[in-house]
Image (spheres, rainbow, N blue to C red):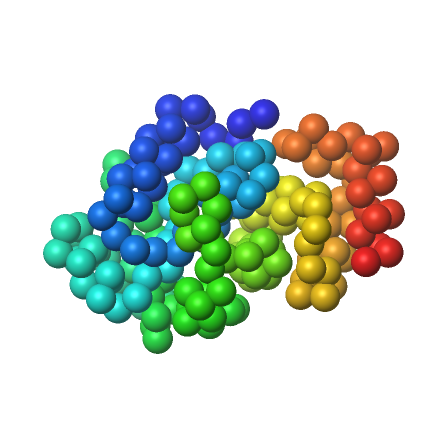
Length: 188
């Protein structure tokens, strides 16, 4: 099942791969979740950069500063790239810690899944009740379904939010299948 139109996600993925060939960044958000789960692709792109990489991006793109959300933004037609910078952005996890903890998955630097879950929780809390909030919730559930998570590093609030759901049709999790996952999560 797709959350966004294939043409949009394909274009977004092309932009992500193009950026990765020119800049150093840690991929967060929906695309980072997809690298772990191969479930739902993303439309927007979220990256964490050092200050020197921010400067390189500013040389090549019209970089807009969003002071209210402590981030920078790049528009590529219908695709938005949110750029979070060291010592400026507030994601619920220090940007510097995200960079230090990043690991390679399929050629991209991404946070460990537990940290990504916590980042998704912060995003969900700010967008709950919206379409993007729903995507954050679905992303959290897809990460919770991964094997070998370090449960001690996952906020109990994530388990609580996920457990309050009855089914997740976007992941083809009907109430019966989903209840099995919830039982496992509650034992962690």
